[in-house]
Image (cartoon, rainbow, N blue to C red; front, side):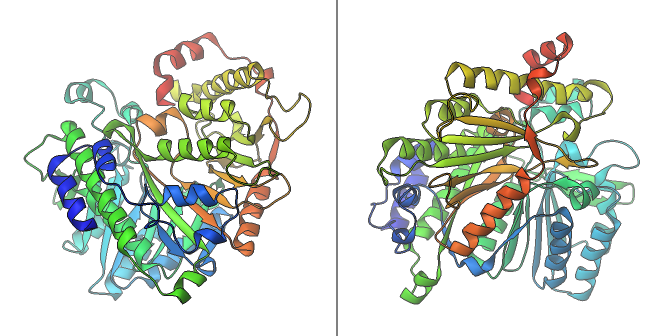
Length: 506
């Protein structure tokens, strides 16, 4: 019945909203046996989210929370070395000088004749002109393993064909990028916000969650990337260098909005149908103390699952359907903190205490850059000032009468490091461990909501051990956080003017 309903939806609707409206699954069918294990703070929310999003049951012993860039890199290399059938990597770009990483991929392909490598990268970021263009470092792989290396470059259609001729390289990335960070092989996958270059392996702080022995979750991530490859450029190797090939002759590269919306919506609905119809033994259900929900945010394609999910979460917390004696608290962080209006309203209008970590100007990745990009850290200071003014106007400043409903802002600063972490953690009370987290590629800002194409995940758990690891993750970030000093910083008039013009691109 579910399959028939799904097919019927696909025949009569080509938009995400219509698909979700037409495809209705009963609450009972989506109420997992593990839902009852969760803390009352999130139990009903998890049940409702399972009706909207694909989901995967996982045992907490297979979830590994990493904390350091060096751990991320070591784990990435090990994932590549263990691969036998497929390696799938998704990132904004691969750094030109990442010789060790490229050699690891080459070695894996050489040792395993049946192994295929799939790369999903951003078109504009990966084809920057010059001798150190990221795409050039991949040419040896393409030439040596022509039929086993598959490279897809996603091009944001926000930049029209005419604008492409006018907007110079680097600036063209302001109109949206491919932003999903997925690193997997065979039946394991690591989700992060980190890209693939030296800084992210050494001194650029991010988040990293590794899921081992998870064929269903790995298949989902791989299938998602394959779906996006259907409206991306394919990279070919020629004697003159890399050549970009657009395979879909039915649509132009800068006019893919309708196609992308349709195929991504169908993809999610098919995954949701599979989640509904899948069954597991009582023993498997009892061992699965984690549930994971992938959420796609692609505002340019009218797909806003992340926004809907967070709206559902805040609505649930406002309804007080959980324990009345609990006061949930939220931790939130973004290396590029500039909450979209929708997210700012959710936080300010809620009664949930929120502790936020942003990047100080010195650890912003654009600090010290030349040209207009050098003004970006100052632009974020301006956005932070505006946010704190709104917090003050709402009477939610933590400097007021202290309580669990206030909002605080800190800034992360560590000598010689930059900051790129992002996500949300929810705890039932200020003294309890997190029971839910949002992680992945989203920066929770206007750019992520409307321009970039993101894949993030909501993870709920009843495991005390995993909850403790998530708490340690928060504490590790707070270790380098100091009270926000943005109120003391001056923002120059030209920065204000630029933010007024392109604020949504930050």
